[in-house]
Every structure is written in C-alpha cells, then in structure tokens.
Length: 130
Image (cartoon, rainbow, N blue to C red; front, top):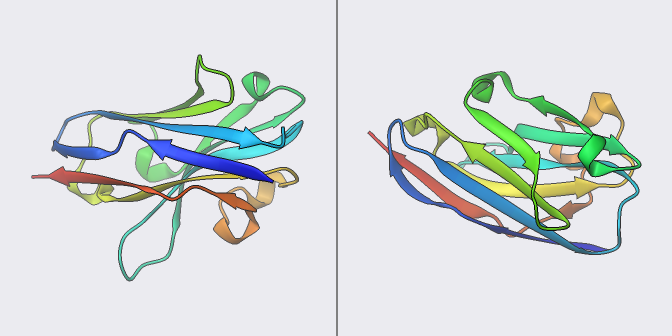
C-alpha cells in the first residue's frame, strides 16, 4: 500500500502562484506514475500532470494537460518521496480540489485516466479569484 498526503493548497488572485506537495509513504514503487488530478463539484476528475518512471522517479518523464502547459511544473521534491506541482499564472478556471495519485503499473496511454490509479490522497483545495 502507498499512502499519499497533499499540502500547499490555498487561495490566490488571478496571476498568482501556489506550490502543492505530495508526500508518499508505505510501499516503494520501483516504476509507475505519480501525478496530479483536479476536480470541481459535479464534474469528472481531470488530469493535470504526471511523472512516469521506470527505476528512478527522478529520471522520469513529465506529461501535462494542455490547459496547464507552460504554467504548471511537476517535479520530484528535494525531500525523499515528495512530488511537487508549481502552479504559476493561475486562472479562475484552475479552481478545484487537487488530488495526488500514484500507481505502480500504469502504461503511458493510461496516464490521464483517473480510474487507472490505485492510490489517492485526500485532496487539497485551490481557489483562484478574479
């Protein structure tokens, strides 16, 4: 089992920045994917960004939803087993609950599908006001 805990959500104005962190504990994934999804009430959970790796998470490759490319950066944190999401130039449409997700056997074509992930955090709220 893998436990994920998010932190760093909050409220900002349009154009502002926030950094989310996700700390993983429990079983170590030697390969797989770890990333972020977001969800607003009444809508499906949407893919934001993910790092997919085999062997070392730091050697993994990043993938982004088109809506956040150029504004969000996903990276492995300096603290062991931590994933970060730096969000810049935030827009009101970025308002959502952001969830950290991980899976140990995800294929590339499935990285954007939330139902393919086995492990989830509890979510952290991000609110962007205009």
